[in-house]
Image (cartoon, rainbow, N blue to C red; front, side, top):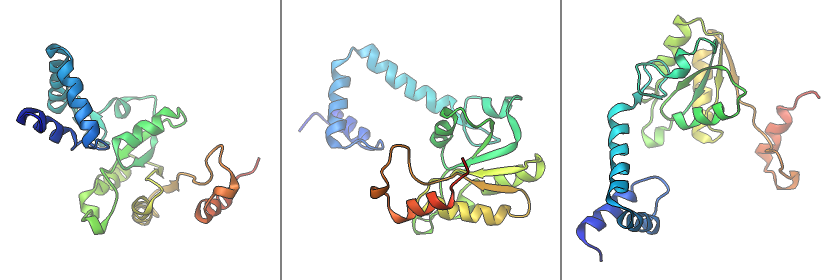
Amino acid sequence: MFSPSVDNLVAQLTRLPGVGQRTAQRLAFHLLRVPKDEAGALAAAIAEVKERVRFCSECGNFTEEETCDICRDARRDHSIVCVVEQPADLISVERTHEYRGLYHVLGGALSPLDGVEPEHLRIDELLGRVERNGVQEVVLATNPNMTGEATAAYLADRLRGRVRVTRLASGLPVGADLEYADEVTLGRALSGRREM
């Protein structure tokens, strides 16, 4: 329907997460309307990030250096490590301003049905960090879904006896109504209750 180059751009944009055919077409048409230097700046930014950004050798976060700013920050508590699935999860925890320890990015979650086994994740690197760096607590902050729970259970089993292992609390979100809560969520909220 469009020229081959526009069709190719739309096809490439649909490969982005959350971008369907119509959104890809809108983005392509937007890029066609903007000045050439603006579209070129976007292309250059993509090329630069692919060239310069890599994974932190210590925690697996994104960085342009050998290690990321968080791992190099002497003010952070190096005795506690928060385990997340992806760098985006790390950013979510950081936005709370409640956590001042280090992180470990697994690179995903265990999912045997999808072919993701322990050797595909950065689990051995986590165990090595715990052994050599004097870590006292590992906070498991994997997603509260089936694969995240399976990953947390696997890690807890591997870490048990070496270090204190904790899991993020789960339960009712702020502003929720009890009548709409499912049994599992309400059950977790009850078991994770705290004194006031």
